[in-house]
Length: 311
Image 1 (tube, rainbow, N blue to C red):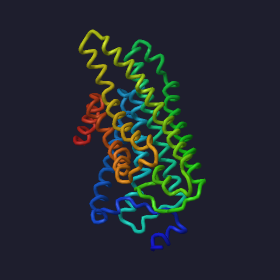
Image 2 (image 1 turned 135 degrees about the vertical axis):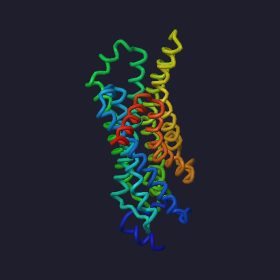
Image 3 (image 1 turned 60 degrees about the vertical axis):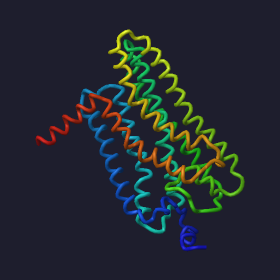
């Protein structure tokens, strides 16, 4: 048993992370720290703009503000511990810390899945039923459409965390940079077939149900846009959905590739790349995508920046 195994015998798990690139850890640390700070700033800037400017007093921006908060929290669950492990040896995380990281990662991740579905439904009503939009999307409905995703995230996070950590672990080395489900299944003792079924089953519920809602919403939106007579109306309707559609493709593409597959197809190297994309890249790109594609947000950011310069 080596020194790291002696440490983890009483303290928790070892996170392998990017150990094969140990020579580049200072560079990776600097890059990740910069990306993390930029992501926090851009997402919190969207929250600040939506909260402070009456121009953004609409359901679409209310959902966008909540998405920005989710992205910042989602990334914060992973990155600080990863930054610590890039500098400190041994790269240990306690059993309780690992369970909490897994729960909050699932909590925020599943909440984002359902929040993206809520945003798609909002766009469907805005485009397909514009005259009744303000009546249907009242404050009470909007609050329910935001609260629901958090409740779903809490349920999924609790189920996965309790089921996984109620079983004995035969190994303590996690071949990943955080406590994700698939790498932890590799450490469980005995046959993990039922655990795999549970993971895929809950993933089908947590990923595919909101995805189907998004698909149905965009099917209705496409039919409505095709039926519009004016090209200007078609372009305006499409532009209000394009940012959300890009974010959905980025998020769901990587999430489905990770969770909707059996453990036999698990590849640590590929899983690290996929996990890095939806824990670091996607939260960074989302506010940038919305800022570039949305004239109101772009204008408000330019106005805020101009005011700062003048001050």
